[in-house]
Image (cartoon, rainbow, N blue to C red):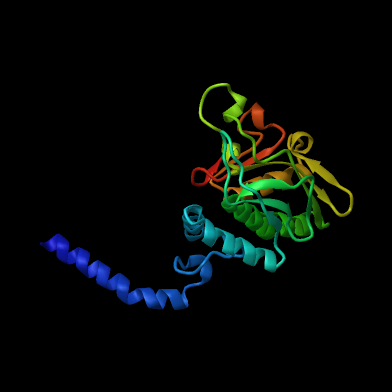
Length: 232
């Protein structure tokens, strides 16, 4: 009986404070407000991203608002059939004034997470720490119907559901180009910036795997939606 009373009292308190929380908490800390790509990363933001995976319509609404604000350029993609079907995916064409080495297919949550990463971390840190705006993001793919590590047997890769993007490098307006393969192993300068950017990515994705993880990732950052803050 005591446990039931305590549970009832807790539910009553939640019901009483919910209107105040919804009105007074900052959006990034408020579980009741829709996600915005300018929300700072944290537990609540991660929770909202996870929740959108089960609600494609709500996810697309957030993405469309981000497009209207100029944070991302994308088009709706046609459904993909076969062994690795896709629905509710988008073809990303750029982030603000940052172009891509090629457009890529992305699940809606991956597109949102990458928009947040580019908007809040990569673009501002390129200008602030390297002294030149970012103009292009180089990648080596997102959607691929295959098993993890291209094995003939085993579980499907995140790429099979367009839930991961492999970033290979960054290009600045002043002409400087940083590739993960060549720049990461250096001891200072742009290598330090890449390592900083990689650490920042861990706040936006379910898993971030870089060159220090294994040889298979020597030339790219694997940024995926599965997991919860895995950073290697």
